[in-house]
Image (cartoon, rainbow, N blue to C red; front, side, top):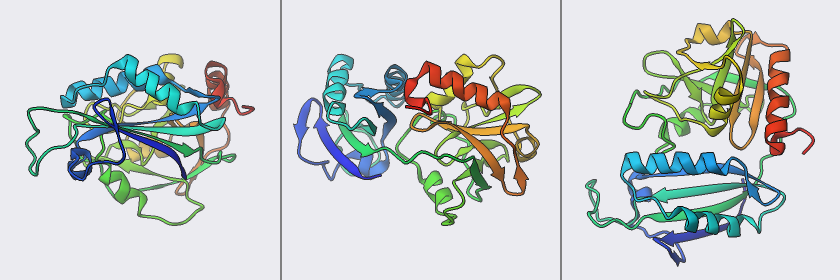
Length: 275
């Protein structure tokens, strides 16, 4: 996605560029949020802010003042086109060489605006990835900066006809797609993998769990996925994306999935197909 604009802060002081000694750059010591901007507003901003705050607390990175951060974000996205993507990065800041965090921490904040991706108008075609997700409860659920597993998984294919890849963990259970959470319809219920041992607690995932009756977390094997009645991916930028094929398994459009998409569109107009 093309970069439209960016800002960098050390603490509350705006700086011209990221410091070469920033721990986010050196060690992936930080967090990020990727959000849809629609008509000058950040979609699901309270949920993004809550996840960022939780992640900062778990990593013991000082969270920016919430009112100041909201003001900076609002001013920044005011220059965005009608539809864009906001990326927010929060790192522990500048530190010396070595893994030990500095005692005095001044976090770095990076805001960037990007062109929104073109919408997918047909059901997704997926593949299984060879790269496995590690089991790491200390980082599970966090949208931390170290995404090398996803980078390796996404580098496994170049075929433009394949839209996404699903990743199993090292125990052979479904984790996620490379850039989305996964839901499978089984026995009339939408099920998604839990995120207490691996994966990201997605904002769109949370919306589905809170708003779809019967939706729940459950461990899913590759066989569970292949034998599901329907499958979709979701993330905060694209919303709910129906899956049409995974390897040799194909799915016809499912009324339960169409109903869920309509419900999302009514709740968040940015995801209304007509918006």
